[in-house]
Image (cartoon, rainbow, N blue to C red; front, side):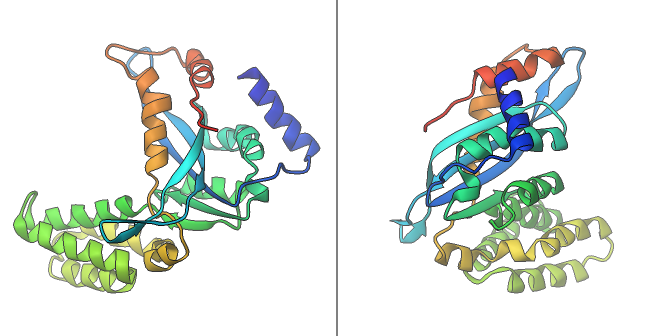
Length: 252
């Protein structure tokens, strides 16, 4: 951990020429809560970088997978994480990659991270996160496990994936107009409207990009939760980052 921090400071200070990168890289970040001593919970932030593979046909649909993932995790604030992650960003050659895709759940701290480390990346809202907001709205209107909710959601997801967000947002607005007594549901619409440029899924898929951030979800499980969220575990804050640095899993 000490070496990684010193190396990140050196990179920031000396601004060395970036390392050579792969053709197309996948970058994502996310947070996972871990239990601390005294009943407190705190967020560990994780960066994952991988190589984008050519699309393959799976059950009649083109699927884009990523491989050669590496992970960098820290329990710290967003600004510090952004600085410390320089060591992995530089090691993987993100700045020199032919092209980069940055996929996330749309959180503001993650967007600022992308602003710093991969400004020109193609930014995509993780498709399942878009689906979560549509699903929550459907369940609010028709009830959980309702056949009507499932049918409406299935149609919106198909339209979103194959035709983009325009028609889906029109349907969401129409649905909300029928329920003015539930103004809190507007939050789902506002979330999606704010991220329209990041939901152009047909164009992203046609360009050979993945549309999900499953790799960072797996990173949370492999690097963070498997090591720090065992039954009965509670960590002193000072012990979390050394454990994360010592348990990083790489496939590169």
